[in-house]
Length: 70
Image 1: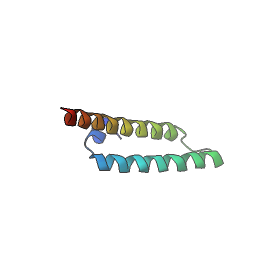
Image 2: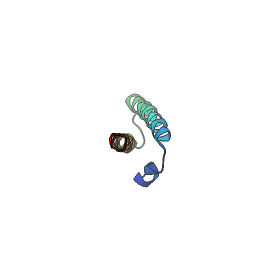
Image 3: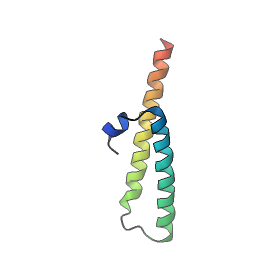
Image 4: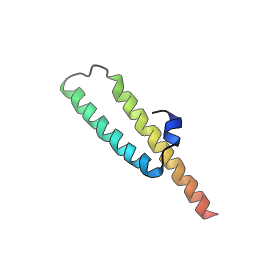
């Protein structure tokens, strides 16, 4: 996913996407442990996607906390 796609998601969609990406990453790691993946770079891409999603979620939570504090 690109950052522009991530920014267009709602908070609930972000949380669901994080869970989906994490379970997908876990299955990729298990599959890679059993037999090497055809494209092992998918593991790296998956980790980066999860990090992007979590970063956006954290940014929104902090933004919301700042608005309620004012």
